[in-house]
Image 1: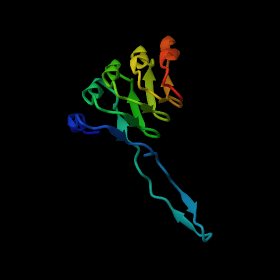
Image 2: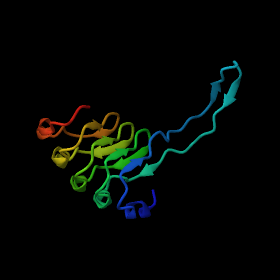
Image 3: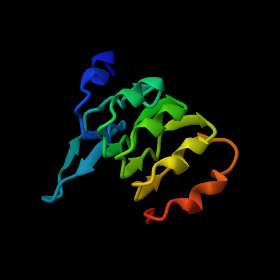
Image 4: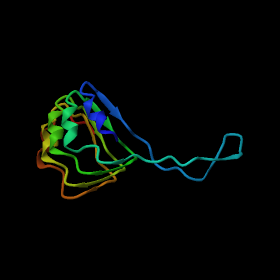
Length: 131
């Protein structure tokens, strides 16, 4: 992911989802098979300390990629964030306590990663959290 992405300071939605590798054949509706080309999943660190520069973000979806690293505590700067979807990636480390300060967060999807530790204790304080 180019660093210039973090210069888009008025960005409100970041959707880089579903960039997994698909190999092999797929059966078409007419019964014939077609080879599906391989597409490269996106990789690298996306939620590092630079994420705090995108303070107007309301929606982050990076589902089904190869993003790694951790979710930076700088995410607390995204005061308008309502949706954080990071499932099926390679994130490690702990889920930062700062997530519990995102009072507008309605959706939080963390599954299928390599997080350690538990869910932050104050997660119940997020009254707007639905998922």
